[in-house]
Length: 121
Image: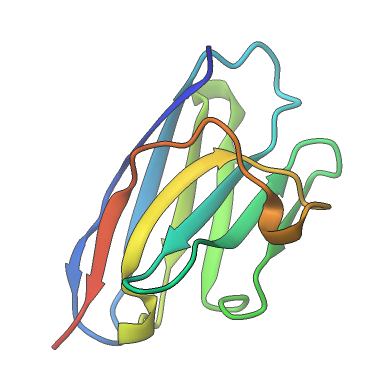
């Protein structure tokens, strides 16, 4: 089965940066699309980015495009989310999962447990 484990979260000041990692296992090919999602306190989960394997393109939420960069290392079955210019509104539990760039909010399957990102001064 497919499994994801996220890491790299923590406490950061506004304007700071964090790099999240997502270690995947059980992937049988490089055609799986891996995405990043987040859920802030009192809000519903939203898609952040979806790394499309078939399109060789990363799709982003309009709210974070230009600040966040998602990437994938196929050789290591690892995905990353580089987050810059963080603000308190970015505080959320970030998780990775299989994604579909065509689906609303990038869909999501085989969720990881998530890693907490807190942006506060």
